[in-house]
Amino acid sequence: MQLGHDVLGVDIDAGKIAKLTAGEVPFFEPGLDEVLRRNLDSGRLRFTTSYAEAADFADLHFIGVGTPQKSGEFAADLSQLHAVVDALAPILARPALIVGKSTVPVGTAEQLAERTRSAAPAGDDVEVAWNPEFLREGYAVRDTLTPDRLVVGVDRNRGGRAEATLLDFYACQIAEGVPFLVTNIATAELVKAAANAFLATKISFINAVAEVCDASGADVVELADALGYDARIGRRFLNAGLGFGGGCLPKDIRAFMARAGELGANDVLHLLREVDGINMRRRSTMVEMTREACGGSLLGTRIAVLGAAFKPDSDDVRDSPALNVAGQLQLQGAAVTVFDPKAMENSRRLFPTLVYAADVLEACKGAEAVLVLTEWQEFRELDPEEIGAVVRARTVLDGRNCLDAQRWRSRGWRYHGMGR
Ligand code: UGA
Image (cartoon, rainbow, N blue to C red; front, side):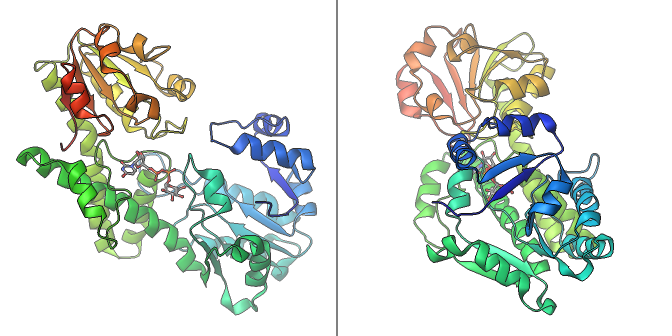
């Protein structure tokens, strides 16, 4: 699908801009390199480090900078967002629409709008709208071109110009049937926080049930399949295991808790505190399971960890449950060797003290337990016989319930899933 816009990408990181200009995507995202090259070749996409060039060029400014967790607290760190607005607003000399895509605490856009209006030479002709981003890593291209819905938050007291501009901007997708929802700005900000909080809650719900499955001999995978047939529940995001990580769900539920607390809406705070707690306990449960599988102590044991990315089809290791578990095992005295198909470089940077292998077999050599902690397709397809030939003990812990338990057991492996 061609959306037909002329786009100028801006970043303060000159290295990133150089790579993008050369047609190189600076991270792993399936299909993005092809989209990048096609648009560079057409001359409709360029990159720059210059805000002045952007202010001069664009009618619409999309801001998609990160809003990470503040260090030592739950709230979101909005400094990157403020930096963009403070650099851009004072040089906006002509009418423009600033559209926030970053995930922010409700109320942020209103503050930014005031900040922008007072700093911009174009004054009241600069408007702010919010258009949250719902794409998933690994599916970024598909989710961008054919999203489930478009949500646009506008200031309804300003005559409808922002709504009309965004209707026009998304005309191709709307014509293809993508729902286009217009709300006030606070609602649009909150839709995103609530969506991620709901997804996180769904995962922690099934993980809490997985604990009951473990205690009662039930199988959480079969249970989730059966639940999922109820259209009101749905099967997606009911995969029990190590829980959620990454640069979004964990920090977004914490920022939502912090903001809800500020607003005195304490029920969300209490609910999400449990969601977060259940999620973090999955990691220690896996460490505990490994310790038990190794006879009660990890000291001096050799453990293979397959998977480092926070989920498959990504090289992102931010708040990765897999690396968190690997780190905890190492702290308890295990020699841990990690392999991931795409995330090795990022893992090495973040966890330089772990040992990294060139492939699965090297990681598993001499291991007393093999842990599958990210469900890459190539791990699902592993041959238990081939791995069995290099390990010291045929013990596999499946942190993502992604292996065929019967197949592994039939080759003499002790198989442990989470909740099955
Ligand atoms: C998430 C949301 O799904 C997107 O809609 C949102 O736009 C994005 O955050 C964001 O805020 O930018 P993403 O972080 O790419 O997307 O990853 P998810 O696919 O949501 O997975 C998050 C974590 O949940 C992963 O660690 C995954 O392994 C885990 N997960 C997912 C489960 O443990 N069980 C499941 O059933 C599904």
